[in-house]
Amino acid sequence: MDTVALTFDDGPYPSTTPALLAALGGVQATFFLWGEHAAAHPALVREIAAAGHVLGNHSWTHPHLTGLPAAACDEEVRRTQDLLAELTGTPPALFRPPYGDTSAEVAGIVAGHGLTEVLWTVDTRDWAGAAAAEIVAAAARAEPGGTVLMHEGCPATVAAVPRVLAGLAARGLRPGPVRG
Image (cartoon, rainbow, N blue to C red; front, side):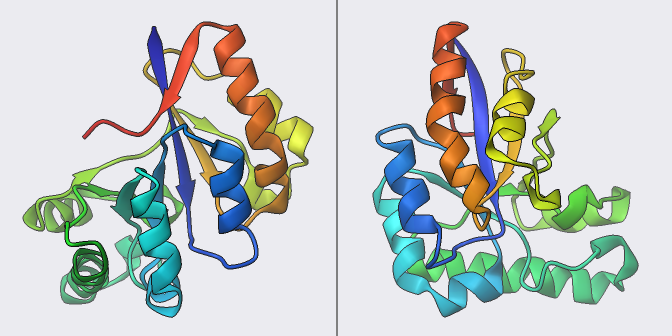
């Protein structure tokens, strides 16, 4: 069975993360965590990890990394990397640049931390206020080996996840985490 990676950015959020974890059930996904949010909600970080999901680094303050000096970009990556390793005992292996904003310099900094940069093949546009049905329709465009971008803090995403999972299964596709 072919896999489609399900990814969730920007969390954790006390208002939506527990419901998202419940909606996923036993299906594993990748959670690209925002450092400031992870620092504010360490128990949720541990809960995501304990549920078997893959944790990824999504920077500390969610800036446009290409607009930062190299040292500031490095600090964004390092602080989140250190925190997630401290909270879970395992440093992340994956990094998603906020907004998909990357460059050769950003990629080099990320690689210097032993991270693999991950973008996406399908943007559900949940961040722009897409309704659950629109998120489901976008995810249905995922091809085998693709990566679907969603966001933890969007209630419509939480509502869409069961239908996203059912739609992938109906197409013979297995949802899962990014394989780094």
